[in-house]
Length: 236
Image (cartoon, rainbow, N blue to C red; front, side, top):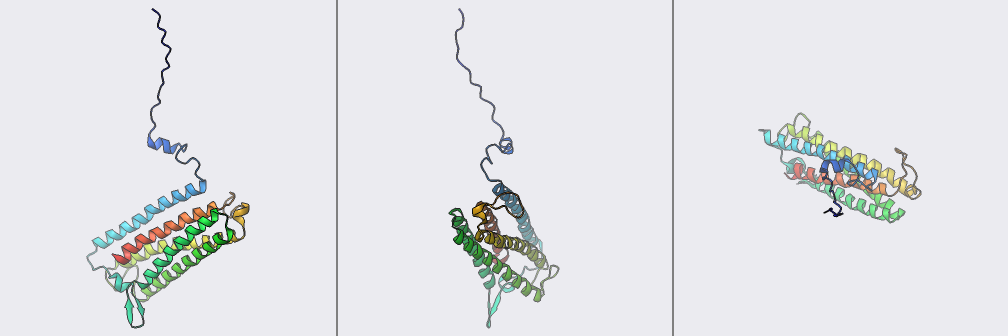
């Protein structure tokens, strides 16, 4: 008897590996703006760099046989006849965390096309960031005046100066670069470049308020890194 079975067999293709799916760039990054994706890639790579620095700090601190400097003594600030531990550092941390809030509000008002509020909040973020850098320069000047060098330290372990100047200097460079771009983007906001889609300085791509969000990603990262530096250097 002739077989009349006409059912259709469905062939399920084998599942691709996770690496191949991400590498194909078909689903994972579909619809993601190019500038935002590049910023995330940069931040992930920068996370590894800061992680290596902090791991190096822990390695140096655990390996040295000389007593590690007391943070309350090294980073104390004289107010009148009193030495207030970590006063300057506490102010610097408060300033940077506050700047993260103003940056978040700037992103919010940017997407609402509120040019005036976005511009003023960007300016406030830039001023707070510049204040942080100025206070860090004062802290460095104070420590250098007291004899702290990358190769010697009157407060204890000589490795302290090298690791401190390297990590805080690298972070301070990030903040300084961020401040420069914040001032540039503040000017562009007030000029209405993000409303008209005027092309940027370093790219032929048109600018819009999405650039404020990308700047915000960088600035929040810088603030987050400072939380770890604060915990490792000043509280430990």
